[in-house]
Length: 266
Image 1 (cartoon, helix red, strand yellow):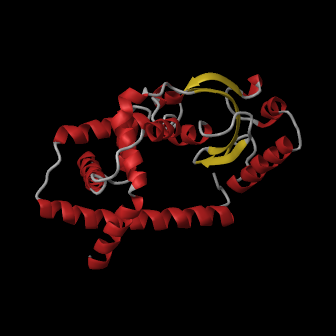
Image 2 (cartoon, helix red, strand yellow; image 1 turned 30 degrees about the horizontal axis):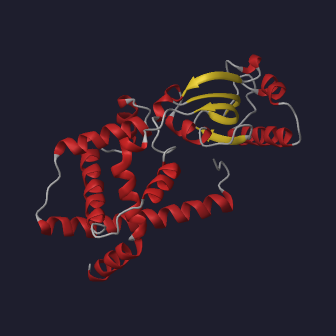
Image 3 (cartoon, helix red, strand yellow; image 1 turned 45 degrees about the vertical axis):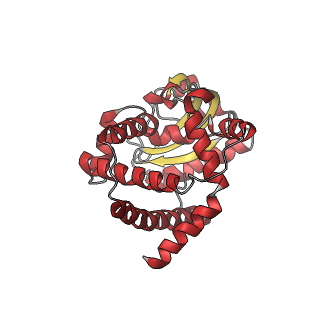
């Protein structure tokens, strides 16, 4: 999303890094508390969570998750242990909310309305979009470099912002199989796209220009035309989870006091 990095990239990167480091520290503190209690987590619960993550983060493709683990130099067993630790932390946090006031019906409904899109079956998402792809290097033009191709992608975005038609620019500049169709790709299942690319364009506003996006192959400019999201579970199916989210919000100050006391002691 930020091929040239820049101030916004540094801001978001810094915020993410600080948040993740604090989460890792807190996780170790909470795991120590869990160990002192002598509690355990049943293996089938971990299996269910890994299947959920595989479905939501990797479009249900086990090969993709194994490829990502290999890139991260992490074994499946290591990933399983990491998942177990996250779930232990969730359970310990939930324990701190056990004396929270019971969620009211309107609080449950409001929380469900806010969360249901994120709880949907993303493997059923379908999108129609226009795309312009500029390869990192052009075999037909040996003088091109990743920098000149990025500059071209930036210029295309500028032209689109000035009102130039997407389909005309796609026919002129795009280097993929859909260039002659004006870059139009219709009714593409999310599962046919890379998880990283899908995560960006399915969150984008219909009609908005997204890009230039960078990957090892080159630079992409996208315009979502229509997005059909997968079905969300009914409130009855996720009521327990939604009630837990309401309790967590109600007792967030209580949890912060609890974890801060343990941070000071750790």
